[in-house]
Amino acid sequence: MRTELVFKDVQRSAYAEDFILKKTELLAGKLLQPDKDLHIAVRIEKDRQETANRHPIYQCEVTLKSGISAKTYKTLRQDRNLFRAINSSFEALKLILGKTHDRLRHDRRRRRVPEFVSELPEAETESIPARPLIT
Image (cartoon, rainbow, N blue to C red; front, side, top):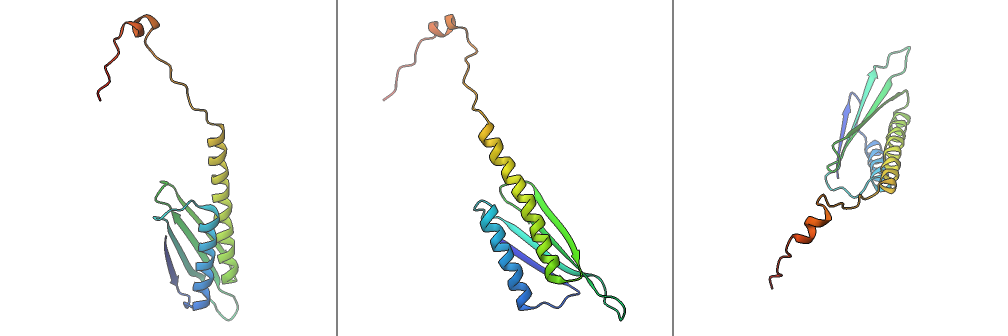
């Protein structure tokens, strides 16, 4: 699993990195099959700069790309608090992956294996000589 962290216009801190890495490990451990080619990119940036009259708005974008599936999942959340933006983005991704996982499990349970049906009529199958076994 590869995890990429990008901080734009935000000071990188060890606490924020550990918080994000913990969230990615929980997400990968709970909802995803063991996938060695999993790529999670987390991008944190300030959407609006802080001034004397207003607070900054932080934006968290989480992109998940699996090596097994061709799909790419992406969530984008904004909040005044950096950690709330991170939490809401990972919760949204967890909800999306949970729905996909449930659908796949339901489809596999309902899918029936088709029985083999010979296209040759019975008269022709009896006239075909059997091959001798090679030992």
